[in-house]
Length: 281
Image (tube, rainbow, N blue to C red; front, side):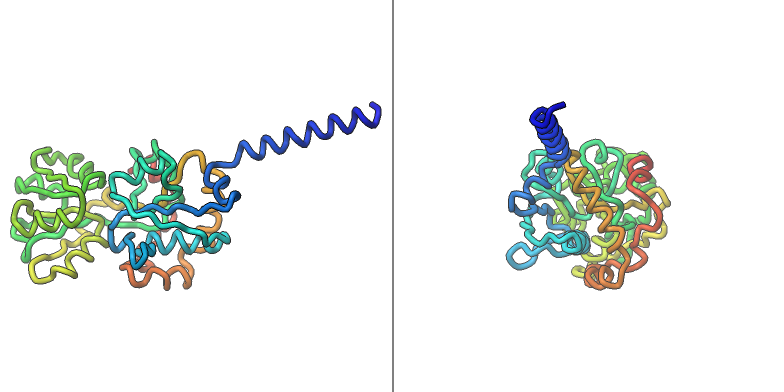
């Protein structure tokens, strides 16, 4: 092979290699490489995720995500507040790059998004009127007492209640925690179902009229694992995110970052993986 022909083949090989590398990069990697921000989406779901001044991303899910991104060298983050039910559609439509919000890793959601490895283990719980007049401690109690449970649209609590046979007419679905609180306070619903960290937050602000149920009285199958959601096209970025997450999760730095959001070492996910949660939840 003469020198010129050899150079031609070499240049072609380099071009093919560069094309292959480019093809493997997802939209988020391309955005970052072009100098654009990482659009971080979340709903108002304290203490998991909520906006502060100038939409500053607060809550334990946001604190962990921002901490991991910082470890990866990324600080150009654009927080975008949306409603809970619109987070996954906005991610799919490329209006968001990462979704936090304290979202459980569920088999139904794993069909539409790619989750990070778990960032938290969470229990379900209820907020009820003072004294728990209907003696509600788990989903079966909703069914057995013919009570009305209120839940937020898109939350796993609806599926959980139906799993134990709670009739659809006994499940009130509203936009979010504010409407849930109003339903229980007015007596239109007997119990509000949420992740327990959110129950604690609501009860703390309404201690004169509400009680929190004991989450340890819930069956084990109601223990869920929270992850951070990405588009399937961004698996390249997610892989790097998971590596940084493994180094960050459970460190003194991370636990200090979430200490004001009802997250303790007991909420660390342990040995459960996203693959396990997608299969079993």
